[in-house]
Length: 185
Image (spheres, rainbow, N blue to C red):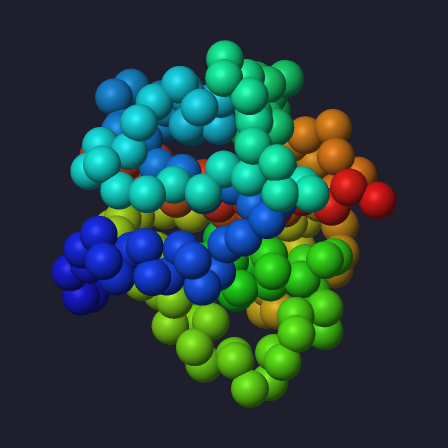
């Protein structure tokens, strides 16, 4: 795995995440990584490396000061509804988050941009190292963590009050990342 820096991180975040998307990382401080994930989801922690995060509400607005963001009602038990997913599946999901319904056919110029988007997804996940584990709320991973997440069913265990939400939780020994997108209608 290649070492990444803040420049490559920022470039890849801008390429993969935009309006109505959530990409943030926090330090791993608890034995139970779900507690650290909740801190990241609720915007109660800063990136331990000081790198950029993208936390944009649908329609391009920001979550207000003191807001818990889109995950305010999530509990550690809710995170139990996240399913383990292989690194390759996590990369696939990261790419599909750009699509309105989290499908590649909803991504503009996907065929021409596929290799580039996957390259950026790999950079983002490389931050967490070779031993990282990944989780998703895409139900396709429930039975098969190695399923093709580009061709998955459009069924998700929702974490928010939005019509639909989908994402990836990345967990390493030192950091937890939350990468999520939302459909509002």
